Length: 226
Length: 226
Image 1 (spheres, helix red, strand yellow):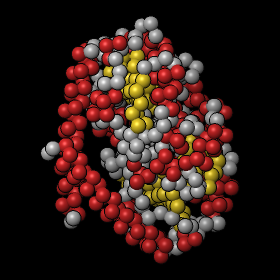
Image 2: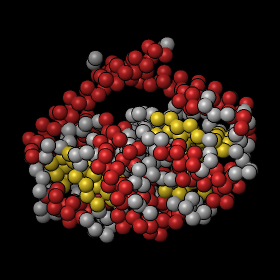
Image 3: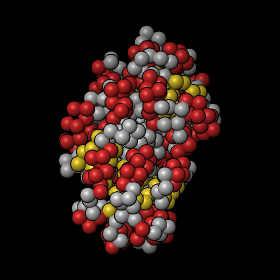
């Protein structure tokens, strides 16, 4: 296949895939809203602390909001096992070599949850700050994590993910000093890229900042979120 | 387009793209070896410390090996500026929304370097533990970084990248205690997935482990590397 034809065909196939995903995401969104769910799509680099934050959030909201989780990974069900051990209903999606979740994977996973028994559905995406940004899953809000150990420049270097964020959670704040994290510069960079995002700063390990974060979530409703 | 036809077409286009990349990577490899270069492809999650490690490595090798760098990012030339400030010849590739470097991008960037004036060419890939694993760039050796702050489970959760590693560098060891890094478990996981990899543990910030790492690199030759 000549290069130009291959490139053209790639673009056409990609557009077809994105359009199909957007259709399915729209259907997911209708379904989740009909179930009066608040749905959150968590994006971050590998090792930013998504699973720990979700676990501690679900535990902190216990008695106020019923949280269920759909979790995506290339391999292993470690994250699902951790969340299940914390008493959270969870479905694991194993993507193999696929670098992101898509709306179809989420629809199938949601079939395995009793949505009427939940108030908040958290989708933990594959650890990847690039590809998941392109895929609407039908969420109400997109939550992007920035670990203090990753450095203050990451919002500038990964603009699609941070630009698409409705909420940014700066994680592992207990390591900020040890990591030499330049907090003011990080917040400046976030304000440049994540224009409309609410920003929280937490340490899931020490609990610092967790009350403000979980109170905020408890105050949101699926139908009011956007 | 019906789903099955779209899926089939996607597979065909992907295969065509991978085959084309492999051809170009083969040409890069010939070219780099003809120039008697040792070429290293650095892969990691965002914020694992690729740029800092490369900078300190180049400085430590000064007078023994001449290091040049090709660096890939979605946006900004921050990394290139940091490396240039350290006196390292560097070419920045800005990928826009593309989640990995490919062999063609590297070939074009290499045109902007005087390869005959280098002994070691380091390619710093886009920060992403998934997609770059699929793209041969024509390197002699693939170097995958694991930051202690990312957690000991990452080799199990990102098998394609860690399985493809010739060398694994555990980075930010000065933060291991603060981050609660389970070193023995991490090494066990690495041995399960990165079967043939040499493993180094370094802190580019404190210099811990850097001598063993840079002495190892100084002892390698491009033509002997694989």
